Length: 277
Image 1: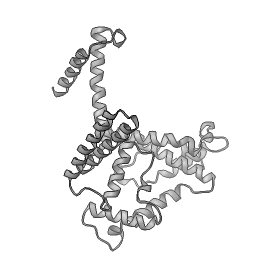
Image 2 (image 1 turned 135 degrees about the vertical axis):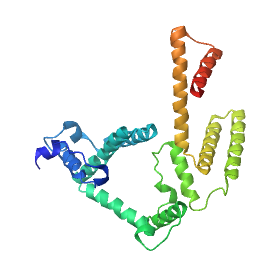
Image 3 (image 1 turned 30 degrees about the vertical axis):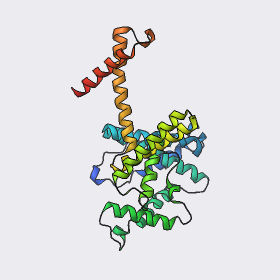
Image 4 (image 1 turned 45 degrees about the horizontal axis):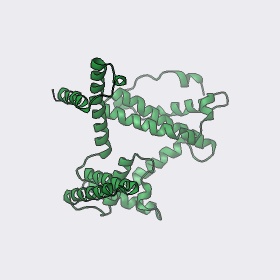
């Protein structure tokens, strides 16, 4: 394949006219990098060594979505797509599968799982679509447990919410928000009892139960628990930056401390007031 096909910058194509025809260029570039005279770093990689990059790139995609950054999102989606093509080339070397197998597999799955679009079945709303999806998935994965499809490496809150969604689709769920909210109160009481006992293992277990109950409540409220906590962590960080700036400007930095909690709280309240303003 001519080298200029790999290195020549593609001309801009109208967004509405694009059909995915640029993918072969990425595949060809990856093959060139993995060639005997390609990139030494790329050629040393394995599926195991690339594992962390898949998680990192997916997280950066989420960050770009949260930031509303479309240019950033385009770049991060490209990085994530690179991981898919990279791993598909490594499995090609094993003679296991390659990129076309990956694409055809997801295409076939989408057709199978949307019989209300590509077949004779009907679905009146998204709830019915999800119920049909789980029913069809169960047929395909005979012998596989319902929750086996929830990735173990998901962030804990996201995994808990996915578990709740899965079991809810087969009817294992509180019929209303009230039951879910009462469960939070029940678990908090049990956490209080564990704290009073002073038993570290019991406290850890009950704290996990509280978190799980809160995630289920978030699901009933149609709130993404992972996004909610991420938003709070971002808000906390922004407020604490103000506290840190005030300590630095007025007192020479935290190294000059410790500082009274009343003082830190005052600067914290300033940060909150700035947000409201």
